[in-house]
Amino acid sequence: MKFLANENFPADSTLYLRSKGFDIKAVGSDFSGISDSEVVELAEKEQRIILTFDRDYGELIFKFGNKPNRGVIYLRLTNYESDEPGKIIEKIISIEGFDPVRKLTVFNGETLRQKPY
Image 1: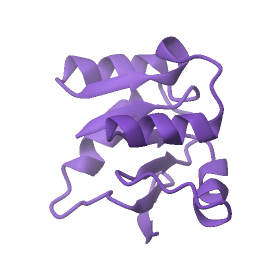
Image 2: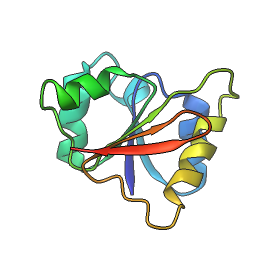
Image 3: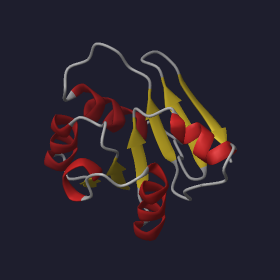
């Protein structure tokens, strides 16, 4: 799996995932200042799953039709260590049968749900 970490995804989590061998690019350091729509375009072009803390992606997908084929993983967390989101992503993708393709995946710290699009 290839990932695109949105600007609000912690740098320490991006580094953690890289240290575990994941192919991940970070909007904040590699493409700073691009819009959410441009993030979706980049994810589409490079076939990457978007990792974000930005709830606007639900609106982009379901209201405006910006539907990245590889999917979006939206973390709704508060009070976390900076590398914790990376560890959570690692756990989520290791779940047997997990498939993010054409889905908005939401994890709120306790439950994981997916909405296909």
